[in-house]
Image (cartoon, rainbow, N blue to C red; front, top):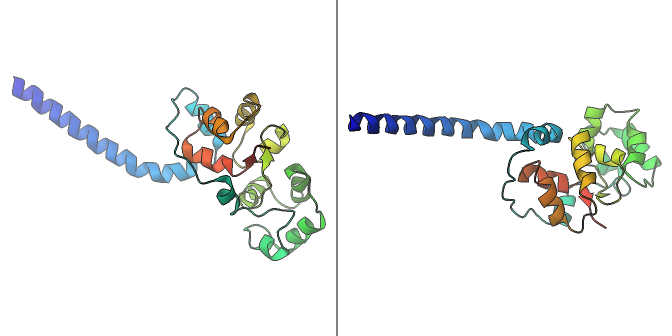
Length: 186
């Protein structure tokens, strides 16, 4: 009787282990897809405990991958997927941009929202977490009304660590690192 119980527990443990291994293999593909929709992640992770967050690369390193719309050359702009020569010319002609909303006014007649999100993954001026308008926050790719509310709720931010801690209640560390590329604290 005892050996059957032990055997059942061993089989159950082996099945659980196999199931977890299968889920883990699927997770890497799912992570890339889920990182693009912050609002959906926020809605499902509200009650979840935040993960331990590794220290991401310094903001300067993360920002180096982003082109600044006020200083990028036309050649640099056309190297961004979705930006052709007429769009690059329009960006250059509209300078200087006070904020991302001003740039969005130039791009919105030329590109769909989805296309602009793709462009904004490579062309961005960091927004000040303490002063950004709701419209500026909503331009961050993947940020919806719920996440915009969370950004605004925890103001004033005194450090990027506070941003990580507060927004980390709603999204994982990978998403925090992605969002950090779009923000600054002045």
